[in-house]
Amino acid sequence: MKKRHYRWYSATYRLNEKIERKFTTTGQVLILCAFALIFFGLNTRVSMLFVIFAASIALLLTDAVSLMFRKSDFEFERFLPECALKGKEVKYPVIMRAKSGKESLENLFYTEVPAAPVPSFEVFAATKEPGEEKRNSFDRRMGYYRWKWLIAKNCGGKYGEFAVTGRKTDGGILFDASFVPDRRGKIAFGGAYIFHKGIFGLLKRGKIVPDPGSFLVLPEIKESFEIPETEGENANEKNEKTREMQETGSGFELKSLRDFVPGDSIRNIHWKSSAKSGQLRTKEFYKEVDSGSVMFVDNFFEEHYSEDFEKVLSAAASLLNAMQREENLPQILFLGREPHEIPDSSKKSFASALSTLALAENDAENKFESCLETLFEAAQSASTIFFFTSKYDEDRKKALKMLAGLGCDIRIFYAGGESEAELSRYETKIDL
Image (cartoon, rainbow, N blue to C red; front, side, top):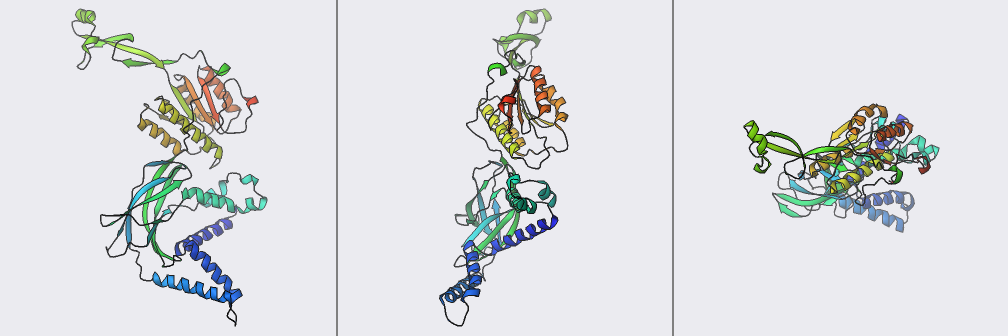
């Protein structure tokens, strides 16, 4: 990609943004018609085209005059949610106020402004649009469609216009705005464009009020996703890994005796041992439960963006959701080299794990082998490994066979073109 293309596209984008903030869609059409009619309708005779041209100019001038005395001195307060789901509409309340208390809130409109929609040249040059290889050589060389895709990706969704109409409160008006995120990650607003429309709805007059705000968008979650069961020769029937859970009640295996402390149940006092030692001793009971699972998400790829990686994250989030319904979340979530412990199956732990997936990025500086030591250490005490990858090569297959040799059930989720004929006995293909 050449730098001059980047400069052209940046300048064009900023110009389009200015036009969008000065004219409505109807106004833009009318302006184009008026300029087109200059070449066809202006002559010494009065023609229908000239009449249309004159009427268009008159409407635009009237709209401009109606906005001359409109002031744009407003402030607002929005109440964004902490997180949302990709593809699901987010509704949030906004309070609009006039700073001096004299400006009219009638015929007023509100739209969010993205924080940083224009990508840097480095990102523009390095990040390929999904399916770009299918475009012709001219489009690939110019990179225009890549530019449009990056702008849309940075914006995170479509920004609508909302009429400031609703319930009067605290010296202002409370109304609802909404946004539909079309990607995961952090969506950041830089402020809002607050404006009036002309009497005919052709022109706009307003200004951008800076007010940063953001919320986290989680990966797409498929409610129908179920925890896969390993069947046939893929099943590890000899997996007997367990861990001990301390129990205060009876009915479980007696593991040890210890000194009685206030709060212990009197029913668990071991009277015979207490009589010999001269102080109260209580019984501790344990039960053996499944040693749990580990979830690993492979983020070792060089591209800034990978559609397959997005599918993998969606599958990982869907599996976490299915496991949380059964109150059996994995003990550790690995995002490449970084382990994130999940202490329990509470909603708080579940939300923290989803947030980790929402903010996941590629690790281009390291190789897959760099994570094996910590992954193998965690697998020593795990019964199941959920392995998510968008790149399924011999190094990964070899590592998985070694993990299976430790007595772990291996459940593989991958997005790619591997055929089932190439799968080994330790592998299970999940259709994403």
